[in-house]
Amino acid sequence: MIQLRSTALLRESCLINGSWSTASSKEAIEVRDPADGSIIAHVPSLSASEVAQAIEAAQKAFGPWSQLAAKERAQILRRWFELILANADDLAALMTAEQGKPLAEAKGEIVYAASFIEWFAEEAKRVYGEIIPAPQADKRLMVLKQPVGVCAAITPWNFPAAMITRKVAPALAAGCVIIVKPAEQTPLTALALGVLAEEAGVPAGVLQIVTGDSREVGRVLTGSDVVRKLSFTGSTEVGRILMAQCAPSIKRLSLELGGNAPFIVFDDADLDAAVEGAIASKYRNAGQTCVCANRLYVQAGVFDAFAEKLAAKVATLQVGRGTEPGVQIGPLIDEAAVEKVESHLADAVSKGARIVTGGKRHGLGGLFFEPTVLAGATGAMRVAREETFGPLAPLFRFETEEEVIALANDTEFGLASYFYTENIRRAWRVVEALEYGMIGHNTGLISNEVAPFGGVKQSGLGREGSHHGIEEYLEVKYWCSALR
Ligand SMILES: NC(=O)c1ccc[n+]([C@@H]2O[C@H](COP(=O)([O-])OP(=O)(O)OC[C@H]3O[C@@H](n4cnc5c(N)ncnc54)[C@H](O)[C@@H]3O)[C@@H](O)[C@H]2O)c1
Ligand SMILES: O=C[C@H](O)CS(=O)(=O)O
Image 1 (tube, rainbow, N blue to C red):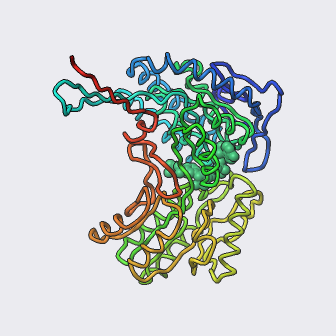
Image 2 (image 1 turned 120 degrees about the horizontal axis):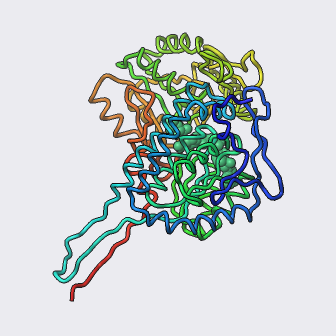
Image 3 (image 1 turned 90 degrees about the vertical axis):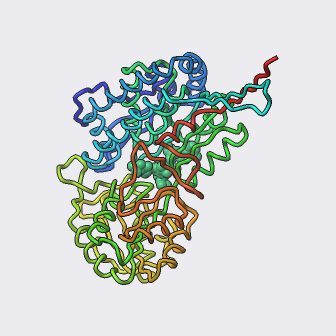
């Protein structure tokens, strides 16, 4: 049983047009606790026609919402921000129950998720247009920014709150309305955010949350001409599918996709800082983040010292249920996730890698896996080419700066990357050479609401957060007026 102060936050129904609805078919999806596989809730499996009703409601709600003064939208968003913080303990409890992350991490995510709403409540009041000096004396040229309209968001299970507010906040701030389809594994956090949005004064139809078969819901949202934009966070594989489904209606697209982050430690790095950064980046959310270090490249001169320091720290990480005090590594999300880590591990060892610490399912059983460090990794291994999405840190040895830049860029992904050096000239060379949307220099934690989050190559399109994030939900309109 999830311990909540406000039981109203545990919703087993969808938010459609201001009402909390179940599926007319009564079909439902089980929500399970990854720590022990127990069923903690059921949410509706909506039909295509029920999702279509949400689109109709969104279309009706768009006019009045977009015509509100920006300051009024900002005030409603601000109230939502304040309500989320006031209910952070309950929201974290729901998140840990359905996603498994340690309570401290869940609480941290709630604060992070709320920061996007706080940020875009302010950005709402700064959507400026332009007046352009005309090339002809009798013309006046103006540029307006207007909301895109009805939007859809499809979000992943690994950050059940932040991946939603990072879309909903700029959408509502810009004057758009949005339908959210959370991951089937983690709908409870999304639905609880919907409860608080209603309490904050978000009108019916402005924010709707639907659950159901992902393919069926996705087909309705991507196939509708009324939906003018899709914002998707998830795997590159699904991103390709959704991009193709949006093509016939030429929707605006924001795609936050997969990663394969290099983490580079040069000879002139502060080794203790690099070890701290590697642990923060690699083992956060049990390695289930899109910006986790996926390949750790360590220069030959410090390889042994770094490997020894890292393994010693990793071996002390506490594995267990997220509700237990002191736990740092919770369960993975499902059996497939554990099997992927095991397959990457087996592949690497079969090709010559050596287990320095960890290397197998944890003694707790179920979906718990030992935080692991591998040495002797090479580019021939799956860990070099695929996103592991688990607590497995493969160490690759390199000799020169030129060599490691080429290795780091040798991937179709381009989301996050990290490097440690105390040499500022080397820092400028590395930052300019890495083909990634985001770079951490002497830090393993780079995400916040004020900086542009996003990738290049097959890690996505567009940016979330920062002043860039609201542009994703705005259209540019040019007005040319001839003075007679
Ligand atoms: N770039 C980022 O900001 C970011 C953030 C978090 C996660 N991710 C990526 O997401 C992946 C892990 O998350 P995941 O397992 O939930 O990803 P996923 O792509 O399997 O699922 C993401 C969402 O898409 C839905 N979905 C899946 N197939 C669909 C289909 N055919 N049609 C419509 N919807 C569909 C799922 O129900 C879920 O809501 C990793 O690759 C990770 O790197 C990226
Ligand atoms: O998994 C992807 C998230 O965007 C991670 S972060 O918390 O935003 O860095």
